Length: 416
Image (cartoon, rainbow, N blue to C red):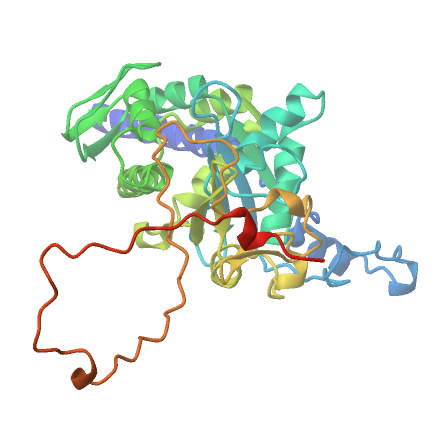
């Protein structure tokens, strides 16, 4: 009897704990929430139309589309797009810019980095994408909306969600996750500014060390482009670790840290929902890319020109949330063709573009090497036959040229 009583008590306790766990899990799932898409939530929109159909005649007319934008664009079911940006040096420049697409139906995620030096179609002294955010903020406008607008010009679609991450938030989020194991590829040391000090090898990186890794670019041959590859490798490694665990440690805490420390249109519940959707992906289905580009100098400044047609292919393969492909006419993009600067729309400030010209000498000035002007070849003199200039008698050794006679007045005066 005593034994049966304990069995019933344990069963009751176990059932209570199970019910409590189910309640907590249910409350968590109710708390997390998918974000709205740029055109409204497609799943909720379709559900509402099915329950309460609206005659097409009562729908408001479509707004006048932008150049090349179709009047009606169908969204892929369950696809969300994100714009993620982070400051690199604390000056406000968004040196890390990524556009992502999360497919919650096929459980795939793609993230594409747009280089910070990407040239945008504006008529300003500096035309780099990474300067858009702080330029807008300093002028009293919304930095996130300005960056979002320019990214739309480069991709052909408006992102659903955006988040501009502060350095401090990144560090605290990594610490809340318990750190990230990563194989640091080389010795990283920098002291001309915020100190970076990392030894090579497999190690558990805390928040500060992870920030060092993602910011470092001093000894890279290709500078920012090589740093992007290291950032991709780090993020891929982090995703694999959490996908193997099947959970993200302290996901609610991390979401709260990010939501409180970012310029974003997402809530903590949205971020938690995204985290759970990412956990449903396999590691091989989470991919990172860099926008195809060509570096070049314009007026002594380093820029990156996106390669138009390769970039359009990557947009449609990796990022486009629509069932309709993005075309050249939907972009406002400056690119190179045969060494000449071209644009998919009207180029702003065409006089600015003079590739290779330097109005002022660079810091490490080298004396220019001028090419000699080509000289037309003269026809060779035709020498007379040898018989006419070979003689048997050599000239006298003391022979000297005839004396030069100065002209007299009579030589140039003439009678009238």
